[in-house]
Length: 227
Image 1 (cartoon, rainbow, N blue to C red):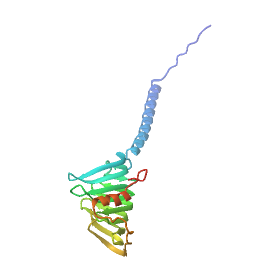
Image 2 (image 1 turned 90 degrees about the vertical axis):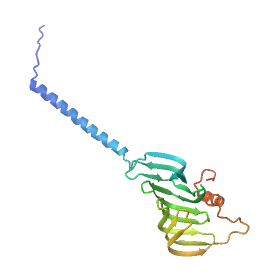
Image 3 (image 1 turned 180 degrees about the horizontal axis):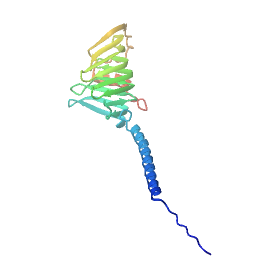
Image 4 (image 1 turned 30 degrees about the vertical axis):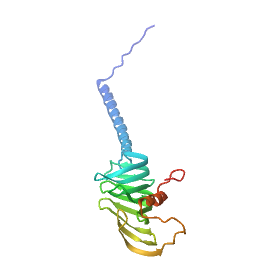
């Protein structure tokens, strides 16, 4: 049986064309794949949306000019250090105690959410903002700004102040950090405070009473009802 062998002749031009088509196709597919990959990575590395650090159940001390000035308690602390304007976010609320030069608490502030802008040294607290000073005066508002550079606390929102003998309500206020010297922009009402129940222990303006009344009353609660 005769076997017929045929030689297949491939033109040099056809071979070159095949190689060119293969290279172009490979480069095109690689470019597409690279483009998609870059978009995905970019979406996960946006400093505006991804925190550089996340901490839970935080209790920490903050220093100012080498002196411990504040104690912060928070359920969640998100740091956006890579953002154009670095900031800290406290989405689940914050509780801050302010110390005087002798490391005594002279005021506290808390709110449902808070943002701290590092470059501006500015706090913004929102939702059920509560404050108290050593005179056991209590302050309630929905929006509060705390400028640490100016040592000033202020707001344009409604303010409710409970003093020992009366209640004051108004719109907007400016105060020093210990909340002992403040001005209400527009007073809307002054009401007498109800007399305490007979035999009830009177609250003094000492540090102990501030911590045992206001601080424990308003501080974030753990299981069991204790702050």
